[in-house]
Amino acid sequence: MNISARINTILNLIIKGSVVADIGSDHGYL
Image (tube, rainbow, N blue to C red):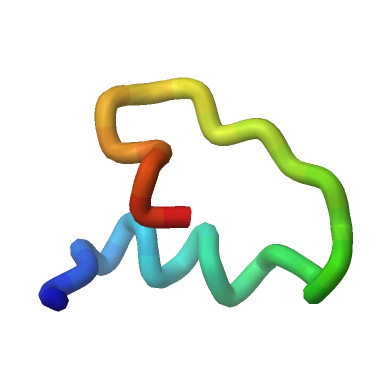
């Protein structure tokens, strides 16, 4: 799967096990 640079950056900011909300059209990738 190809992940955009934007999603990859957000992914790298998320601490494993934390609760996050990504509201947008591509939130299913996270």
